[in-house]
Image (cartoon, rainbow, N blue to C red; front, top):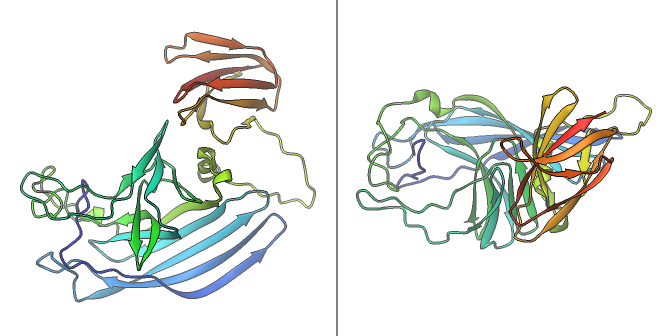
Length: 325
């Protein structure tokens, strides 16, 4: 493939990682974890004609640390890959029941995608094949599964050995910015020059997690990937103190930013087609709370309280300015 498209070779080859060791099992009061070590034998690159795999092989080492934290439903994965292979696509897959649809998030929405079963990979000149890979900002929801991730922004639901899997793309090793000989694109997508650094040789780390059960799905679950989970080092348990939290599993918290001293903005959105509401709880006394637009004009004012109910219309985005006492 290239950086604009994915094009499997005519004689594609699939390699599977093999588990070789389970070690470093930790059972503590606030978390439990273990380390899984895999090896993956795969071709060193495409062959010279670019229609199949090279006859030379390399071995990639893959280390996966799985962690469960007390009080959180997230199964956390941190994967380290030592990649020695070129022209390849490395994915991690979670088995699921047959899935004809999936949901991938964008910055302010949740998009429904259909699973493409019949794929036409070879197209005519100046045409482009419809592919089954979709973008994801931080979360994928399929059946009872929600997969959250940090920066793994391509996913696919596909069948493998008679069962559907949810795949997240880890590495796409490509050697050209654009090519004119791809099966899935009947012409180039840009200038055709070599990009050897895009082969992604070396060591890479990936963070992702799994939440099971539709009742526990929320776009806010992905925030765990961006804010490190802290475990107490003391033997004393202490009450948590938070800047703010909200009660809805539906309303998504996108970001917050400090604009000036004793003031910060919270951005939230409703990804559904129905009206929704949430309760904002603050861990401090506030002097004021307003809804503002992108020009910083005030659209609505709320009573200054440590608990405030915020309502959202379908697909609505709101920016809330909080002023501290």
